[in-house]
Amino acid sequence: MTRIANLSRKTQETDITIKMNLDGEGKYNISTGVNFFNHMLESFSKHSMIDLDVDAKGDIEIDDHHTIEDIGILLGEVFLEAIGDKKGIKRMAHAMVPMDESIATVAIDISGRSYCNMKLDFKNDKIGDMTADVIIHFFESFSSSAKLNIYGTVEGANDHHKAEAVFKAFAKSLKEAIKVEHDQIPSTKGVL
Image (cartoon, rainbow, N blue to C red; front, side, top):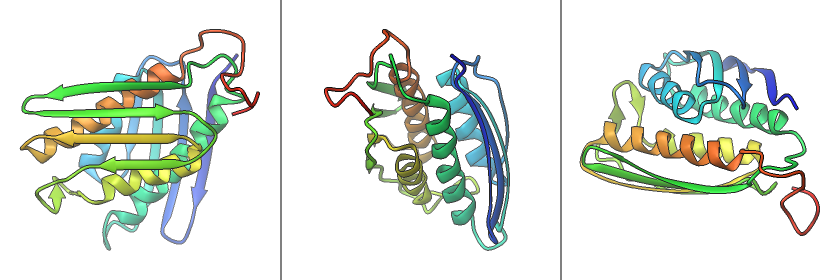
């Protein structure tokens, strides 16, 4: 079974190509135009062991919202294609990740239904060159197009550490949820 996908999305605001290998080694090549977001996606790839190539050009001269939102949408679509029929996956997983004074918890259910509940409070409007409140929107966009449930919380004092802990917890929980453990569809419905 090959769990690899490569898709593009072009709008008047963004031009994005993403390639994902769910059974990779955590190799990445990320270029979004938003340096802190690059760092978060690199961290996600490394800690999920998902190979990830993201090439994005967007209207960041306006702000980073459209670029990050559209990457979330396309990343979810690529994930959905790569995961296929979901036969044999663990399906549900969670991770708790500390980073210095911060701690994040993320739980995922690859359910075929979209729901996102992220309680992430940041003190500052920006983390590096990234708008802090667009982080939740990224996860909402990913959840919607990947057709999965994601729940996350974070506590701490430093916004950089809080954001990074969330992305690492997201990586760890997704890595565990996509693990192939058997040869069945993990649902009483017979489909996910």
